Image (cartoon, rainbow, N blue to C red; front, side, top):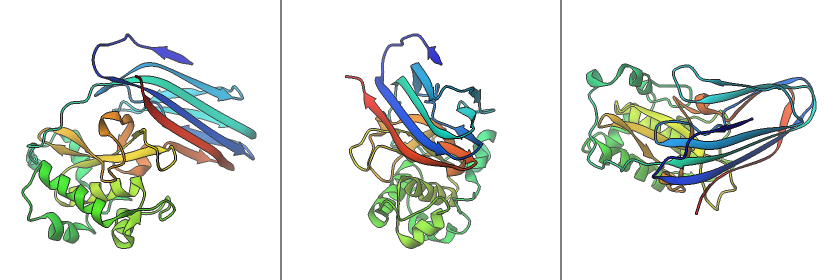
Length: 272
């Protein structure tokens, strides 16, 4: 399956490469979110999706969002999905003076990003957020201070969290991976009445091993500003996949059946 769009001027191009392999031991339904987002600050110039063995696949757009999802069913055996794309990103300059938007002025569609969720218990961490950051000047600088605190106090350690780890768990155990750093950033922001959401994407870094990367966005000055508390990625080189209230909205794979991942590799490489 191939798609192309006209070549547009400006911005930096990236080659995305995502290879996922599974061993399927019975009828299994898969739902993937791995397509590069085609919109906002990036344009998908070309892309391809190859399934091994070949099989029927359905790609659909998530209602009200720009995300694209893949649905397919595998009966049994080894299964591989290979997605490639060339994406141009044109990044808007960071607004260091962006202020916090009063709740009554927030767009309707942004209000949901104020609420506590399964992985972002902003209600339970409200006291901690107020104690740590409540006295700081509101706006971009306060969200940057949240990132500074997370980077200084949470250790990046692979294997310290699981699929059920929440922001409150990370705050307590003081360790996690990129998704955990992003969840804690989202949670602190929401506890301060700053709308925030999780972003999943492709990034290019040497360590840890190539994987999907999670960061977060805060709604400041009437637009979404992106932050990475891990400081592992160049945010201008992060190719977006999806945004959501927390990790459950942006999972790259949801599996319904007896299947096990055997390998994974996902990268975004700048085109020189």
